Structure formats: structure tokens, C-alpha cells
Image (cartoon, rainbow, N blue to C red):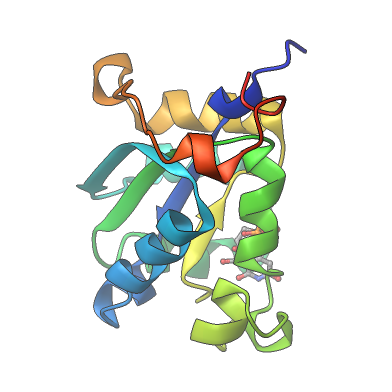
Amino acid sequence: MKFEGVHEKTLVLIKPDAVQRGLVGEIVKRFEIKGLRIVGMKMMRLDEATLREHYAHIAAKPFYPTVEKFMMSSPVVALCLEGLEVVDAVRLVMGITKSRAAEAGSIRGDLAMGYGNNVIHGSDSVENAKAEVARFFKEEELLDYTKDEFMHVYSEDERV
Ligand code: UDP
Ligand code: MG
């Protein structure tokens, strides 16, 4: 796979529990202060078909109907984030799936207690991130712009 440097992208969904609990700003802030570039951000409602595609790997699990209902219970906020090895970086910042066991300092570890209700989705591989960004964003909804901060976030040799 082509090395995409600081332009690697990932897909984040701020889930309905976070929207309802007023945590959108807190979650966006954590990505901003981490040094990531927001290239897409919108509020949207998810439907069954999108969720079935997005959660194909859990669609046969007994807990899937609960997840589906939860994910449709209010709008979500979709974010496309960019940075060096951003897929892995976002997974680390998120914490593990079961929030009450997630490491302190992570988004789930600090902000949630639930398993299903775990405030955030983040792509789990570069390949899945590509498919997920394309699923939730149209090409024209991703904005390419210079973020001068990148020159302070990365060293010169990392900033390719
Ligand atoms: N989930 C759940 N119970 C489980 C496993 C997963 O409710 O035992 C939900 C949870 O909201 C999770 C989502 O299904 O975020 C997708 O599962 P995945 O294994 O992809 O976890 P993630 O990548 O979100 O950590
Ligand atoms: Mg996952």
C-alpha cells in the first residue's frame, strides 16, 4: 500500500450516546489537541442499510439489533481525520471497545462505561478506513487545506 504520510485518513463516528450526553465538543477537542487535521465533519442520521454495511463484521452477532437501534437513536457526527499513521493513532486515543475497561486517558476510558454505548467509532485498518471514509463522505465533502500547525506537530522528515 502506498505510504500516504500525513495524508493518511481515518473515519470517526461520534455515536448517539456522545451526542445526547453533550460530548461532541470534548471528543473533537481531543483530536484537535492531538494534532490531527479535520478534513471532513458533518452531522447525519444513519439508516439500516448503511449500518449493515458498516458493521458487516458484527451483523450476525446476537447484540447486533441493539447496536443498530442505538446507532439510529439520534444523529451522529462523522469526522474524517488526517495525520501520520492516523488510523492507529485514533484507535489508541479511543481506547478498547469495552469502555469501562478502557485505559484512563483514552476517550472511552475517560468518557464512557458501556460496551455498546462507547461514544465513538474509529476505523481499525488503513484498508477499512478507505472504505469507511468513502461510505460516509462524498469526495467534495473532504476539504484539502494547509494546516500550518503540521510543521510543529511533525519533524521535517516525517512531514512528507
Ligand atoms: N459491540 C457491542 N458488544 C460487543 C462487541 C461490540 O455492543 O460485544 C458494539 C460496540 O458499540 C462496538 C461495535 O459494536 O463499538 C463494533 O464492534 P467492534 O468489534 O468493531 O468494536 P470497535 O472497533 O468499535 O472497538
Ligand atoms: Mg470496529
